Structure formats: C-alpha cells, structure tokens
Image (cartoon, rainbow, N blue to C red; front, side):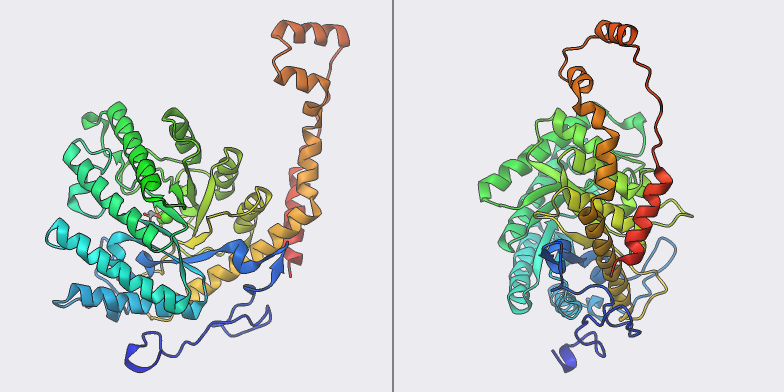
Amino acid sequence: MTGADEFFTGVGQISYAGPDSDDPLTFRWYDADRVVAGKRMEDHLRLAVCYWHSFVWSGSDVFGAGTLDRPWNAVGDDPLGAARQKMAAAFEFFAKLGTPFFCFHDRDIAPDGATPAETAARLDAMVDEAAGHMARTGVRLLWGTANLFSHPRYAAGAATNPDPEVFAVAAAQVAHALEATHALGGANYVLWGGREGYETLLNTDLAREEAQLARFIHMVVEHKHRIGFQGTLLIEPKPAEPTKHQYDHDAATVAGFLDRHGLAGEVRLNLEANHATLAGHSFHHEVATAAAAGLLGSIDANRGDAQNGWDTDQFPNSVEECTLALYEILSAGGFTTGGINFDTKLRRQSMARDDLFHGHIGAIDTVARALLAAASLVETGELARFRHERYAGWDGPLGARILDGSHTLVDLRDRVDEDGIDPSPRSGRQELLEQIVSRHIERAR
Ligand code: XLS
Ligand code: CA
Ligand code: CA
C-alpha cells in the first residue's frame, strides 16, 4: 500500500527485534513464531485489535471535542465512502502491526441509515468490504458484536427495556450482527450489556428485567444454532458505566445467571481487566473465577487508573497482572476460540496517528513477556505443587468422607472427640509464593 491510499505513512511492518532493541517501532518480546510450551506465541495469545477505540473514536470526551488525527472520520455527505476509508485505514494498521485478529461492533464498520432497511444494507455492504480486506491481508475476526447502547432508543436498555418494541429492534439487530460475524468466520460473538441495568430502582422492575434478559440470550443461542455458527457466545461482565448498575456485574454474577436460566454450556465469558477493577476485583480474580466455573472464553486486555473510578481503557503495561491472568488461562488449557483483544484507547492528548502503534506495541510486548513468565510458572509447577499439597488432606479418607456426604455433623463431632483431632495451623506462604512469581518474571527470556 503506497501513496494516497496509505494512512500510516512512515510506519512499515512491525517486526521482532529482541529485548535489547531501542527502536520503539519494533517488538522486544512478541515473536509470533517462537514456540513457547509447545505452541507458537501467536497461537497462544491470539491477539486482536479493536475497531471502536482505534478507528471510530475521535478523542472526544464529555468536556470536549475530538483531538485525534483521524482523517478517515471526515464523513462529508458520503457516510458509506467514509466507512470504506476507515476500513482501509484499519486493515492497513492490522497488517502492519501483524496481529492475527480484529473485533468490531456492527455500528463501528457501518453507520446507521435513515431506515432499518438502509441500516441493514449498509452493514451488508461493509461486511463484503471486510471480507475482501480479510482475504487480502489474512487478518481474521476474533469476535463481532452489536452496539446496543449508543442509539437513544436504548437509553433504558435493549433486552431489559420496559418497552417490548425496543427488545424487538435489538433482537433484529443482534440477528444481523450474528449473521455478519458468521459470514466473516468469526471465532466468537460477544454480548455486552452496556445499558442492561438501571439508573434508579424507583422505576425499575428487577425481576422482569432479568427474565427479559434471559429470554433474549436464549433467542441468541437459538439463532446461533439455526444459522450454524460454530463460534462461542460470550457475555462480557461489567458492573457499571454507563448505567449505575449493570446486571452482568462480574464473572460470578454471570455464572449464577447462566445457571438460573438454563444457559450453562451455551455461553462463556469475555473478561475485561478494567471491568474487573470497576467491580472491585483483581483481573486475576475474574479469570480464576471464570476458569473455576468452566466459563473461560476470551480476554479484553487493558487497564484502569488507580486514582479514578472509571473505565479508562488504557493499554496494559503490567507484566505481573498479565502473568497472573495468563497463568490461570494456561493452567486451564489455554484459549480455544478466545484470545486477547486490546480493548484499549489512547489518551486524548496522544493525537498523532502513529501513537496507535506505540500503544499497541507496548501492550503486545507486555502480554508476550507475561506469556513467557506464565509458561515458565506452569512448566516448573512450583505454584501448582504448593497448592496441591495445601489441600492434600481433602484427598485422604477424612476429606473424602466429608465431601461425599457420608459424614454428618454428629459423625464429625464423634471423630473429633474420639480421635482427638487437633489440627495445627500451617503457613500459607504468601510472601514466598509472591517471590516465586517475581523470579519467573525476572528470568523470562
Ligand atoms: C465497554 C465494553 C465494550 C465491549 C463490546 O465498556 O468494553 O466495548 O467490549 O461491546
Ligand atoms: Ca470490552
Ligand atoms: Ca472497558
């Protein structure tokens, strides 16, 4: 790509140059073909760039206008032409960065039309356009989703709206977005309930809204099977923002919701680091909770800011946080259809076009380095061994009889009295274990 068609002039193909490289437009840790724990790095991490923050967002915030240099967003009187320009810029970026996947909302790639028919036709046209770029560049789709939160009709929710007509419009939109994702060979489809929540309980019927949401997800499951979509359906938990309270609060809340409504086995989780922070959890907690429930799906890698309480979606830069998450993921067998999507946006002052490369390269090196540390933790088995030994009693006769229901409280009282059971506390060794993690991070090469 050269000349007038090129948006990121001055940036070529980003390649691996090793940890000692001083060139910020190279990878120091991400070496796609390097085999780690039996698999290529690229196949472990399954990295994706998100369309919305990177190519749609102009840098505007609630106090001010767009700041970012995004020439493809100059719509004029040709919204579809602008959408095509934006897509050309996006695929130029994906290809130069060398990440294998991207993710999009329906409205990111195709703007709303004046009528539902025009909106649908625009999406179809842009899906065709995307298929062409994907075939040309080899970039694949990690997941698609529907934007059920920007349009004013969704102010009071989509599936959980008090008006069933809004539910109907949302259902039509998701049917189309799922079909678009299927047409593009998407590996997953994500449902994020941005407005599925409430601002005040004074006007909200919680029981009804939960039942509506469950019905909606069942319809999505049914449609997935009807059209033969083989990818995974993922719910993305988030506790709040934009609403005061969102129903898909965190991993444990969604796990309970899926069980209550007979959806277990059909839907897994897309976990975002910044959403964990907002829920008052570590990302490690969210990933471990999902793994324990067999719901691990995919990851939105980013970070929040410790000094403020909103969804800043910054690029991840903590090797330690990513190591702990990847340790859980590798211990659970690694990603299947999921991957790592950078749901990340630049700061509003990072207005130069090539800042998008710097943000992504730093994030990619962070997760690549974390992968090396996590794989080495799994390989030596130091943490797993300690944990296994800590619970060893539960594999012995006493533990087994407690768990299989053969001991009652009275039986246990008798055992304690007769056998003189008097356990002594043992060290949990937290500091030692933290040192083990640090050592693996330091030595990861
Ligand atoms: C917003 C969410 C959203 C989902 C996709 O906070 O992270 O971007 O990932 O709708
Ligand atoms: Ca997200
Ligand atoms: Ca977010």
